Image (cartoon, rainbow, N blue to C red; front, side, top):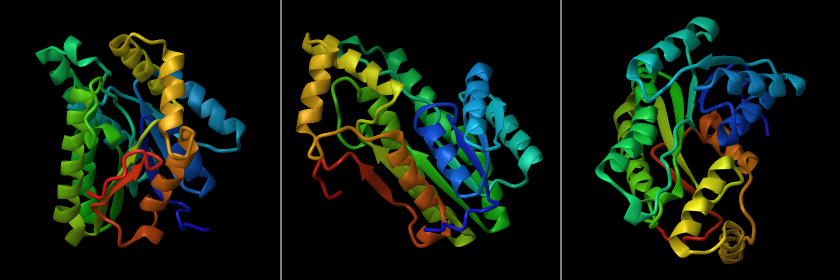
Length: 262
């Protein structure tokens, strides 16, 4: 399916690895011009080299998006290099998974800073510019922990829940100005983050990470963990005009492990 994304300027935060990198690859396949943002210059260089090896030319910007000024500068630099941003995909920032007994007030603060504000610092300037232009799409890759509380992801899940509310609210506020905002909530996905979560669960349950992984796979209705490319495919569709009447949606991608309707 041609998603009519050719020539669109797509900004992907967290684009140097995991789901963000998979999103960058999929947008490149659709003919979009892609700019990735990540904290590590080395990570960006590695990601760009990998994309180039596949025949894709992308741009990279190093920035710590937990810093509002640095995020605003990254947005300005992206637009200087590639013109107005048509699509924003937020996939940067992740709250550390921590067993509930290890939580401290600072851990809750850190989770909001790492996940919620990292997204907001980029969304805020861009949604306003998109609204002024009368067109734009934002897809926030959030996480299933914002809907289903888990004992090792309470702080991060709270940040995810806040992001879902902010996304739905911005969708309603900016819909009249031509901007769509949606959320994708991945469940277990084959990324480096999965290993961190397994280690936290292992500490909490007194079992090995391999035992935890095996038991989690067995309880998945699809009997396997998602790939970053599967998540990216949904993101690219939601960002395209083929999803022109989808806004304010919260898309669960957990393989039906949580059969809920709200």
